[in-house]
Length: 225
Length: 299
Ligand SMILES: Nc1ncnc2c1ncn2[C@@H]1O[C@H](COP(=O)(O)OP(=O)(O)O)[C@@H](O)[C@H]1O
Ligand SMILES: [Mg+2]
Image (cartoon, rainbow over all chains, first blue to last red):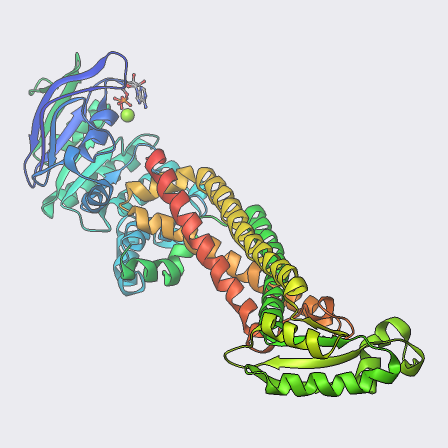
C-alpha cells in the first residue's frame, strides 16, 4: 500500500528524518509514535505527497509519488483518507459540506450520495450537527468530522495524524473504536500519536504494530511499550 | 484546454460556487469596472463604425463624381454651359453630366448665406455634376478639350480634398479600434489583478481543496466562473447605459454632418451586443491565466 524506501527529509536546515524504510501492507494497523517534534506529521505528509523526500522514494499504490504531476497527485489523494492534525476545514461551510468536500471536488453527485453521507455522520455521532459550522464544534466533534471526511471516498488507506489530540479519554476511545472498525473492514490504517496510553489500549482490540521515530530514524517498537 | 474542461468551467455545479467564500468587495469593484469599460467600448465602437461609414462613403461617392465649374460673365454663362455639357456627353467614360438648377445651387449655399439668397445677384459660377462611368474618363484630355471650347471651365475631380478627408476618417476609425483594444487590455489587467487578489485571499481554502484531492482545473474553475459571470453582468449593464447614451444623441441629419452621424446604423446596432461576451471571454482568459500561475506558486 504505502512504501518508504530509505527516505531522508529536511525542511532546509538539519536533517529531520534519515534512512526511513517501512512498508504498510494492505489491511494492517500501524501506530507512529515519538516525542513532539520528532517528525510524525512530517512522515505522514510524505506519505500523501504534501512533501517530497529529499532522498529516497515514497511509493503509494505502487506509484512513485515524486514522479506525479499535480493532477495525478490530486487523483492519488482521493484514494488516501487523511485526518489532518489541524483538521483543515473550510470554516464558511457547514460540517456536512466539509465532510462531503472530497465528493464535491471530485465531481461526484453529492445528492445521490446523501444517504451515505447521513449514515456516515451518524456513524461518527454527528447526525445532529450537520448544519453547524466547524468553528462551532467541540474538539471531539472536529476530530470525528475530520475522520468522516477522510473515509467518505472509501479509501483503502487512512492516515490519521493525532486524531485524539485535544479530546478527553472517553472521546479518544470512541475515535480509536472507529479506526479499529475501519481496519476490520479491511482498510490500512496509520495513526500518528504521542499518547502511549492510547496505543496500549488499542493493542487489546487490534493487532497493531508500533513504529517509533527516535534519533531521526524509524524503528519498530517491541513489546516494551 | 479540452472542450469538456471549458464546459465544466462555465456550467460547473451549484456546489462549486459555494466552495470559495463570497468576496463582496472585489465583486462590486469588478462589476463596476467592467460596466465602465463596456460603456466606453460602446462609444469607441460607435466612433469606429461611424468613421468607417464616412470613409467608405466619401471614397466611393466622391471617387465617382466630379464637378465642372463655369466661371463666365452672366450673359455667356448659359451658352458656355451648353457647350460644356455637349463636350461632356461626348466624352467616353462620363456616365452622366447634369447642370445644377438654381434651387440646388442655392441649397448648397444656404448653410452660409441663409435661404433668402437670390443667386442672380451674385457672380456664382454654374456647377455641372459629372458622374464617372466604368471605366473612367481621361481627366487631362477632358481638361484640354474644355480649355479650348469653354474658357471659363474648371474641372474639379475632388481628389485634392477627398484624400485628406478620407484619411481623416480612416485615422478616426483606427483610433476607435485602438481604443477598443486598449479597453480590452485594461479589462484584462484589472481582472488579472482582482483574480490574483482573490486567489491570494483564499490561499487557505485552495490548500484545503488540494488536500482533499481537487484538481487545479476545479479550483481555477471556481474563480474563473465567478469573474467571468461578474464581467458579463457588469458589461451588460455598461452596454445598456452606453446604448441609451447613443440613442440620446441627435438624429443623423445632413445639416449636422459627421457629428450627428455618430450613432449606430442598421446592423451596427447589433455590434454592441458583442461587447459583453467579448468582455466575458477576456475575463475568462485573464482569470484562467492568473489562476494557473498562482496555483503553481501556492501548493
Ligand atoms: N514547514 C516547516 N518548516 C520548517 N520546519 C518545520 C516545518 N514543519 C515542521 N517543522 C519542524 O520539523 C520538526 C518536526 O515537526 P513535526 O513533523 O510536526 O513533528 P511531530 O508531528 O512529530 O510533532 C519540528 O521541529 C518542526 O518545528
Ligand atoms: Mg504532529
